[in-house]
Image 1 (cartoon, rainbow, N blue to C red):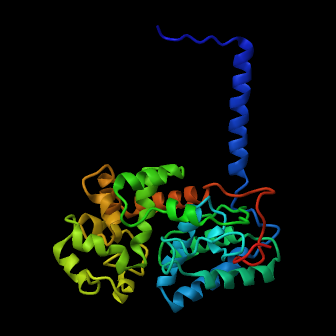
Image 2: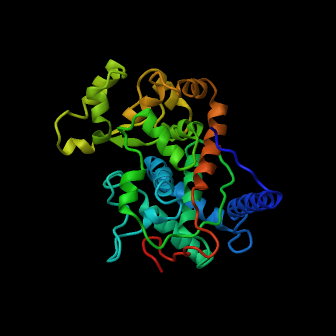
Amino acid sequence: MAASFYFSSTSMAIVSELIFLVVVSVGITNAQLSADFYSSTCPNLISTVQPVVQSAINEEARMGASLLRLFFHDCFVNGCDGSILLDNTSSFTGEKTAKPNNGSLRGFEVIDEIKASVEQACPGVVSCADIIAITARDSVVALGGPTWNVLLGRRDAKTASLSAANNDIPPPSSSLSALISSFQNHGLSTTDLVALSGGHTIGQARCTSFKPHIYNDTNIDDSFAQTRRSNCPATTGSEDNNLAPLDLQTPTHFDNKYYNNLVNTKGLLHSDQQLFSGGSTNALVQTYNSNPSQFTKDFVAGMINMGNIQPLTGSNGEIRTNCRKTN
């Protein structure tokens, strides 16, 4: 016999009040991030960050992709809290030496330069976590991509997690189901997954990241695999650090060509090509390949959604004066 449940008018009122409180608290948490958070405390913030980003990308176009990647690797480890920037201390090991980051994550010196400029303009006001978010947007714009209003108001973590960095950032060997689960675990949809993966329209990857794909996988164009093998031998050695563009066609321009590569089975990483291998994400890849404006729209939405992952706000965390260490 099925169990029956009875709610009195009093209990219903309590439940309704609890639901209301939960909804209100969620709304307050989201409302604490806003595009004009620093409008009075640091009105020249955006104009202070942008020229430093532009200068770094002018010097090396690849830096734009590296700065965008910093945002992803920060947000996927205990939220967008600037923890990715912390150096090791006697009390914790930072995230820089985690497997997904060690030897490949770049751009820390650029963030240092931006932070120094921001501290000069408005000391002790702007978090490193927010600087990463603004820098990611400005990097996309500098390489020809869309702009958006970055939501701000994050505070900085006082610690970092090596284990979370090793466990929560999906590796390039990930299956489609693993990618979907990873993004869902961070409150992101499958649409966010496919759109944000389009960030691979810029930047490069190391041989060690794509070697299994070009030698072992069958869902890859033969000539493309042969080309990549010429600079990435099957044996382990110094060549593991050799680089190849994530987007075969326009590696220093932000566009939708990444999806065209996938449709033609020329995705560089195993995890890239998984998005177009007969699974549930095939249709989205085809949409973004044929409709660049839809990709742009969904990428911007995905970046905003990712920036909302567990931000520290209010009295939580701190505003670091040096992004590499706690105050």
